[in-house]
Each structure stands twice: as C-alpha cells, then as structure tokens.
Image 1: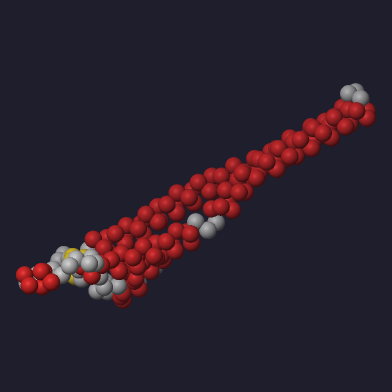
Image 2 (image 1 turned 45 degrees about the vertical axis):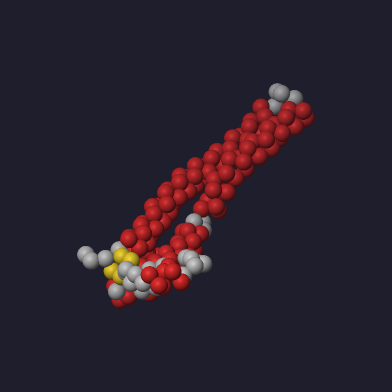
Length: 172
C-alpha cells in the first residue's frame, strides 16, 4: 500500500502516505494525523493569493492617485496660464487618464487570475480532503471482545479515551 501511495504525486499522495502509515493505529490517531496534514496543506496552496488580492486592490488606487495628481497639475496650469492655454490643460488631463487606465490594466487581469487560482485551490483542497475522508471511510472498526460481567462491574467509567477501536480494511 505504501508503494502505491508513493506513486501518487502531490499533496494528495502525501495525504495517502500518512494514512497508510497510520492505518493500523486507532481511528482517532488516523483522523488526527490526516487532519494535521490538511491544516498544513491549505496555507501552502493559498500562499500567493494574498499578494494577488493586494495587487488587484492597489492597482485602481494607484490609478486614482495618478488621476488626482493629473487634475491638480491641470488646475495649476490653469492658474498660471489661464484657461486659454489648451496645451497645458490637455497635458494634465492626459496624465490623469493614462494613470487611471494603467491602474485598471493591472487590476482587472490580476483580479481574474486571483479568482481562477482561488477556485483551483478550493477544488484541489476538496480533492485532497476527499482522499482523506475516503481513506477513513475505507476502514472498519474491529470489534473488541466484550468484557465479562465481573470486568464491567469493576470499571468505573473514568475515561473513555481508551475505548477507541482498532481499524481493519473494509472488505471491497
């Protein structure tokens, strides 16, 4: 089983390898080991998403800053030369429009890429999580021998932690 699990590429393969290595442990140990691996996989898959989200949000803001600066430049030119100097007036408006366009040129594709990658991460994580659930569901709890009446009477139900059952493969 470990040889076959090693042949599975990526994080899903690593998940199956952990499951195979912990298969004969108690069910709780298997579940916790798989959950621990899931917790480390999600940040790894999402590692570039915050940068893309920040870039998509900052692009239009940088464009807006350029727009404001261009309009300020336009009003300064109008104050110096009056409204009759169209060359100074159009230079400021042009600067404002160019920076707005550049901000949107950056933000729109990055926003689309962020959405696509976020969807892919969600699908991949769901696939890995499904592998873990399938591995757990592919096991059956082995029946423990029932204690005799004397043994049951001597127990005082102090702790149920030792009541975990061992796992065996589900007959396919």
